[in-house]
Amino acid sequence: MMGNYSYDEFSDLVEEVYDEFDKKYFDGLNAGIIIEENIFYHPESVDDDLIALGAYRRDLLGNSIVIYYGSFMKMFGYLEKEDLKEKIKSTLGHELTHHLEFSAGENGLEVEDLEFINKYKETK
Image 1: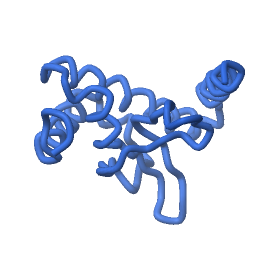
Image 2: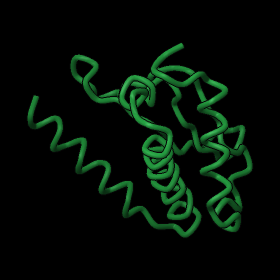
Image 3: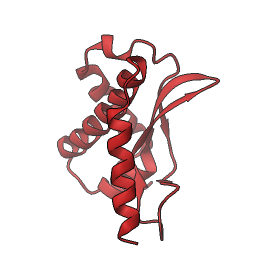
């Protein structure tokens, strides 16, 4: 077990957070929310110091939001339950915004994320 939460406990927290969102925002998210066990290091990461907590994925299987259990446990496994839920909610909201913007033909958050990566790379 990584951090203070088992995979099943973490999955339950993700489900609790999901239940707090209005389901209309998930329209078109036909591959659902997937929880992967691994730590996901961003491809631009130097020395494994840039960890992604989630991702919005569009592929042949459909549109999905991926939440990385390993990443959460590495970064936030020590948090109390309510604080961890807030981190999950923030991540799910971020990835859901990517989904909604894609559905609307917008890319504001994608541009913002790219600016963040470019600033990160400038410090390396």
